[in-house]
View 1 (cartoon, rainbow, N blue to C red):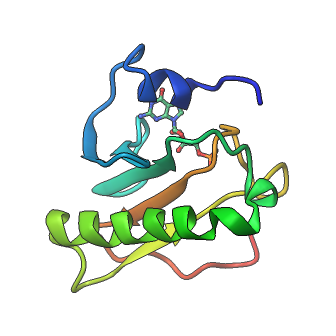
View 2: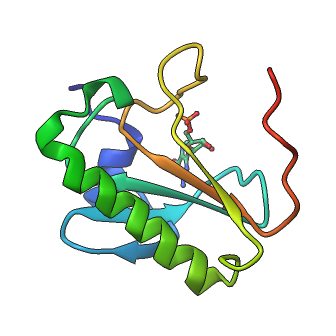
Length: 115
Ligand code: 5GP
């Protein structure tokens, strides 16, 4: 897999506002937030897209979701709610080809429409 900007954040070659880290998962604030809370949760392992997740990586993806759950609590948005989004490839508008979950909240979000 080609190295992405997120690998550089994992390796501390690029700065990021890190809000969570364990041995397998890292989370940091999106550089262009779409809501008061907009955090990207990524695996330290390089996986390009949702299409590339292997069955033996199911636990890792679960850990990403649990990290998002914890961050939502820490950020004080768990009760009101939030959105977890994973974009895939062109039609999903994926821009960075290192798997990531967007954790978005802190305001009333619009419903997901056709667009
Ligand atoms: P995608 O469209 O691939 O699902 O989302 C990629 C996200 O990464 C975008 O929301 C974009 O703002 C964010 N992003 C791109 N480059 C950087 C960066 O260098 N630092 C941080 N913190 N976020 C980035």
